[in-house]
Each structure stands twice: as structure tokens, then as C-alpha cells.
Length: 338
Ligand SMILES: CC(C)(COP(=O)(O)OP(=O)(O)OC[C@H]1O[C@@H](n2cnc3c(N)ncnc32)[C@H](O)[C@@H]1OP(=O)(O)O)[C@@H](O)C(=O)NCCC(=O)NCCS
Image 1 (tube, rainbow, N blue to C red):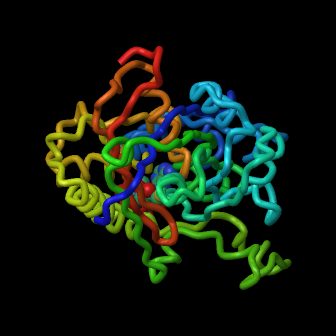
Image 2 (tube, rainbow, N blue to C red):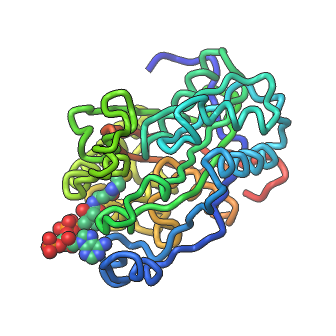
């Protein structure tokens, strides 16, 4: 890779998940399913669900405020706000603009990024590019979803899988040999109908017909997603390690997208990475799409498990189909342990 004049690193993180917990036992009362089926097929025990008033920008704002506080920077120090989401508050303006306004980030550009479950990874990679190119110094990246409002609560094959939540990270410049060491993004739009919401866009505006067909809800071909997800995450992990000239043994923490414990287990098996290096919290949050990785990172970091100097690898896949990874050497802000 071309030698860069400067790098970028995560200088703060935060997350927020709604208070309301929906357990598998609660789901048994909504659709024909069981706690046993959900746990054994997905690893999920419960997920958080936004209340009627809560939209993506509300969750994103709380995660962003926590990340700024953690980074020790003021909102007007931010040059860019990137929000990875496929469940925006509305078609437009961008949820990122709503977050920018409510944060008081008056010097920032703001835009949404629609890469489904890879949204946070795509956002981090974009922020890294903006910083290393010198266009921006400080960028806030948020992954947020309120998927519960786009789920068909009559479709047991999808409604048991997802949850609501937000995670955020602030990126700032650093020495070119530190911070983010490798980035990777790919897509394959020929797989679009594996996971999508068919109606509500310019192709199929919502009509009586699409409404009757329930096409304004998430549709998924679960077995197809499963197959491509494992391959994509294994490839994205190997490629980003190669870029940085590191071996898997040098990775201290692998934080994969939390879609299904069996997908994570298959990735662990194919890579041959010890389980204790892999961060898993799907049991408590389900699949929060673009938010899974920043939520897991913030949780595990603030538990003290990630130390300064540790090598961390994020890897995700999602609707689109999209996939990607970010590899970095973590530095804890001054004053923190590690
Ligand atoms: C969805 C998924 C858990 C289904 O697991 P699976 O082992 O492939 O299960 P199948 O689809 O073969 O379904 C088996 C049976 O369970 C049933 N079933 C589906 N959902 C169910 C549920 N919530 N509760 C009980 N039974 C259910 C199916 O109807 C099917 O019944 P049938 O054999 O009588 O037709 C799995 O395919 C998966 O995780 N895919 C990836 C999904 C994903 O990660 N999406 C997000 C990507 S970001």
C-alpha cells in the first residue's frame, strides 16, 4: 500500500440500547416459535426494542454523546458525522444531519451510509480515508438501527433475529504506523434479494398492493445469507491481515458482526482463532445490524479487556450484499487503564 503521511485511530467510543427487553419467551406469545429454537439456531436469548417514540436519531444521539465524552472533545470540534443505517428516521434528510444538529456539531458535514450490517465498517473506512487524506481531522461514526419498526412481526423467520441499538466511535489523526493498519470493503449487488425491503423506494413505492403483500417489511433468504456470510467474513479477515503484514495469531480481539452464533462459530472454525479472542454479545442484543460491532467494542473496551497496544479486528457482512473489515492497534485515551 501507498505510504501515508498520517493515520487515524479511535479516540472514543459509546453505545446506547433501548431499555425495553424482548425475550425469546415474550416472542413465544407473538409468533409460533420457542426459546429453544431461537437459542439453538441463533444464540439469541433477548434483544432490545425501541419504544413508540424512539427513532434512530434518538439512539444515535445518546451513543454519540457518550463517544464524544469518552474522547474528551466538544461537538464543534467534529468535522464529519457519518451514520451507518438502513432504518433512518425518514427518507430524507439524513439521520446524520439530525444527529449533527442535536449534538451541536456546527462545523461538521453529515451524511448517512447505507451498507446494512456493514454500515459501521464502511463508515469507519470512509472516516479513515477522510482523515488520512487531510480533508478532516475528527470524524464521528455511528452505527444505528431501529429494525423493530421494519420487521414483519408475523414472520417468525425474521422477527426473532433482530434488535435495536446504536454504537459510536470518534476518529482522530495519529502517526501513520499506528491506529488503523488495514481496511477492506467489497459488495455484490447480484445478491440483493437475500436480505431487503422490497417496497418503499422509487422502484416500488408503497401502495395498497405492496402493503397487502407486506413488502414494506424486511425479507430474507436465511440459508443464502448464512452461506455467503461465512465466506465473506473469512475472506475479509484474511485480506486485511495480509495488507498489514500480520498473522491471525497477532490479533488480540476479533469483533465479528453479531448476526448468528452459528455464523460466528463457523468463522472461528475456518480461521482457527481461539474462541476467547472472539467477542460475542448476540445473546443479549440479537442482530442490531450496523450497530453490533460498535456496541460490542464499547462494551468490551470499557470492561477493561482491550489494552493499549492490542490488535483489534472488526469484520462484518450485510445486505447488499456488502462486507468488509478494519484492523487496528488500539490506544486507550490518556488517564484510562491499559
Ligand atoms: C434464519 C436461520 C436462523 C434459520 O436457520 P435454519 O437452520 O437454516 O432453519 P431453516 O430455515 O432450515 O428452517 C427450519 C425450520 O424452522 C422453521 N422456523 C423458521 N423460523 C422459526 C422460528 N423463529 N421458530 C421456530 N421455527 C422456525 C422453518 O419454518 C423451518 O420449518 P420447516 O422445516 O417445517 O419448513 C439461519 O438460516 C440463519 O441464521 N441465516 C442467516 C440469517 C442472518 O444472519 N441474517 C442477517 C444477516 S446480517
